[in-house]
Length: 317
Image 1 (tube, rainbow, N blue to C red):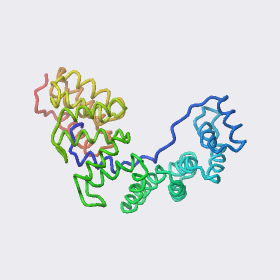
Image 2 (spheres, rainbow, N blue to C red; image 1 turned 90 degrees about the horizontal axis):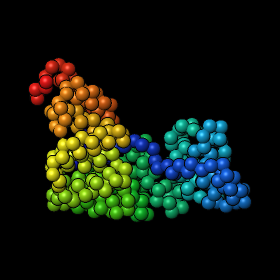
Image 3 (spheres, helix red, strand yellow; image 1 turned 45 degrees about the vertical axis):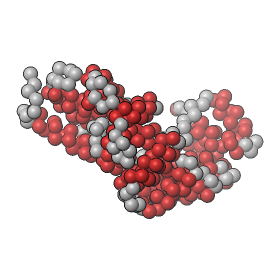
Image 4 (cartoon, one colour; image 1 turned 120 degrees about the horizontal axis):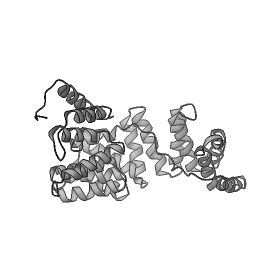
């Protein structure tokens, strides 16, 4: 649901259980790997992580996890922080290697000790997600933020917003959210939009909220796309345009934001910008019920039960 409460939105982000940051897939072809192999065998440390990545992202028989791990270990011994983080990610994910969060944490800390802010951020994630140790997590997020990592800045903003591990402080939350947004965090750009929409630590400014949501949406945020849709649905900073709202909610949902199906369900149930359809609304609510957002899933399940029980606040032909 795009217009959820500020705390609820932040809790969902704060407690996200995704794996630490992975290196971007390279998708290189065989000639590129041959050149990387030549450089790696010649002792070019900068090639180790790239070579390992080429093995991990190859298709079919060309994929070779053992070779990737060998070169990552060579890089770790050479002190390369990219290799430390990449190998840590493999141990944390537990898909290509036996899961070993202790090894992952050790590698992330080693990367941080060598000045890599992303290593500090990933260490913070391990403490938050695996150990539920927010004190340790925040210490590593502080270290990541000081090193310029956008993720660390974003986590600090959420901590001050929610008062988790630190006293709640709107001024600090806004300051860190601005820092994270300026550093390139799409989540921070979206959440800063919510600050302006709801007047959290800043004056209410629906136009500025919409600008920020649109910026985050253009950078690929499905949640921000739903927030833009909600602005068109509710006339927040823009004229009401229900057809555009429907299209944007549908795009957000297809991009992975299952909560947007709930908004679509409401619009079909109430006939907003589309012919009312109880059957279509139920279908959309069922899809929303698969959302990872427990609150949205529960509301969607309640809506299905209500409609299948024959009740609706809006008469439907």
